[in-house]
Structures are given as structure tokens and as C-alpha cells.
Image 1 (cartoon, rainbow, N blue to C red):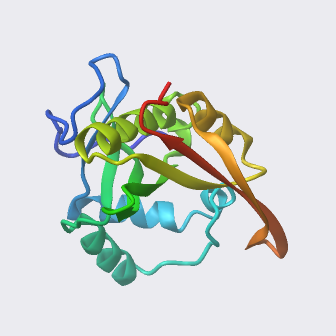
Image 2 (image 1 turned 90 degrees about the vertical axis):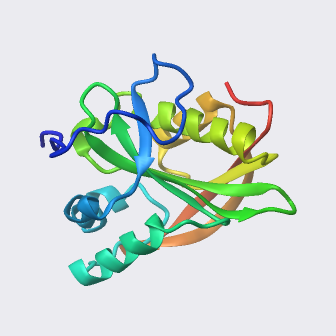
Length: 192
């Protein structure tokens, strides 16, 4: 499947990139992203790689979800992942469950466009979000959950400096079988 073309170019990222050499940038989620995010949230193949269970999502539910995720919040940051060269929106990255006292948050990422996977966009997005979490928000730790069987995602996270912190046995139920989930974490100053 070809990458979607943006109808309006996004000239400036809304979160500072690590450098101009990074292949992606972030911008705020917008109502115009609705049909793209709806397609991604209704993609059972994508959900094979994610901890959460696949469920069909209506346009009405997606519109509400997108409006909620686009709102300002002190406990989560939700951003569109866009290809710098073309401005194409290819995924979503989030920092959620931000605890201002313990100064940690949970990272979640997916590259929704199949043609955009395996191009280094996930690694670039993770590194840039970690920079935002540690340098701008002052967090000390970021953690995530990943399916044990999702070797490509685990490799991305390890290459960014995440370490394995826990093993949750039979934690996710997908396609009639129980799946193990790994907890990975990284502290400020450990990003590679």
C-alpha cells in the first residue's frame, strides 16, 4: 500500500527534532487525520503487533477518540509521526500516564502505514519522544509494554537504550491464545 499524501503540507514540526538528519518529525493530531487513524485502528494486521486486542472501531468512536487525544493534557502527549521529506502522516506516538511526582511516563507507538514500516521511522520517533520526555518535560524514566514475540519492536527499543525490566506471563489475549508481554524501561541519560 502506498503512503498517503497529505492534502496540506506541514512545514514546521511542533516538537523540536533531534536534528535535521532525523527522517521524521512530530505534529499535533488534527481532525483531518480521522479517516487515516480510523483505517489504522480497524487494521487487524497492525494489532497483531500491539499488546491491545483488536476491536472494530466506528467512525463516531474514532472521532471522539481523536478529539480526546488532541486535547491538551498534563498526563499525556499524543503526536502524529510524519515523514520529514514528504510530510506524510505514517503513525502515532504517545507518552501517557505521566506521573508528575514520580516523573515517569509510558511510551506507546505504532507505524500505521505498512509501507512505512522497517524504514527507521519508529527508532527516530522513539529517540525524539525520549528527548522531549527527558529534556523538555523533566521526566526521569519512560517505560513501555511490548509483546514478547514482537522482535522488530523489541530491537528498536533496545537500540534506543531500553532495558528489559519484567516479564508478564499470559498478559495479553489475542486470537484465542495468551501472549507474554515484556516491560521495558529507560532512564534519563541512557538514550542511545
